[in-house]
Amino acid sequence: MILTVTPNPSLDRTYEVPSLDRGEVVRATGERVDPGGKGVNVSRAVTAAGRRTVAVLPLGGPSGALVSELLDAQGIEVAPVPIAGVTRANIALAETDGVLTKINAPGPELTAAERESLLETVRGQSRGADWIACCGSLPRGLAPSWYAELVARAHAAGVRIALDTSGPALLRALRERPDVVKPNAEELAEAVGRPLATVGDAVKAAEELRELGARSVLASLGADGQLLVDDAGSWFGTARVDAVRSNVGAGDASLAGF
Image (cartoon, rainbow, N blue to C red; front, side, top):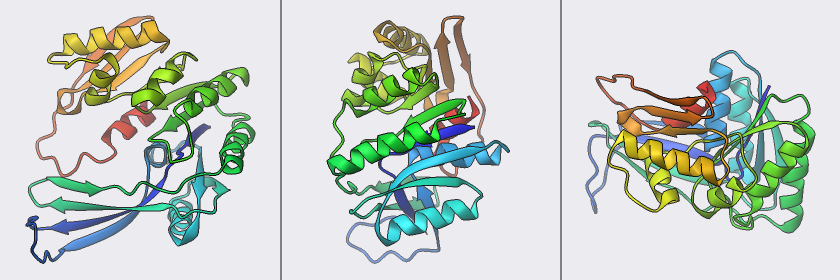
């Protein structure tokens, strides 16, 4: 079983539009509503692959209830953490040429009791898990050190943990030696403090993250491909896509595949 943790989930509403013109009335040609968040996307991909997953989510308000209903309809087991705030709702505008404009809400602020409840729910659900995948940004109320604490608790329980986040939260968590970190190209460059112009640059950056504590680095480099660096060596792979409709969730799906 793969347990996913999404501290700041969302209800994602996507509108298909011919083009996006500022200041004009834009009429959508289609729309859809999905449960959102990086860990949620990992659970959806794991389920599509025929494996069991449990999604731990802080949920509140009508949007939180709908996220739970949508996941249940897809056969995904949800371990909700009730919160007083309302789960955020994001909007995406998808143009016919493949350009995607996203408006992400900040999300609710978790209380001290809700923070502890989230950690305790992860602890309880992790029994029997092969992996814990902690993914996405942290909501207001969770300090950058929260992921580091989660990694430490997972290892104390003997569970492998994958981390997909960025910025201070990633750098602090590296001290606890997560089994896998999954940055994209931009997040990898941010972590080492310099631009990455080539795959070789990305390999060197991944090796630096391993020196800081990551046991393996799985880096999604967008259209350029995917990189894995661990104790056994380095691998790089590509997959040709003739017509890109959307890149939403691509990195999350790659982590689920790993």
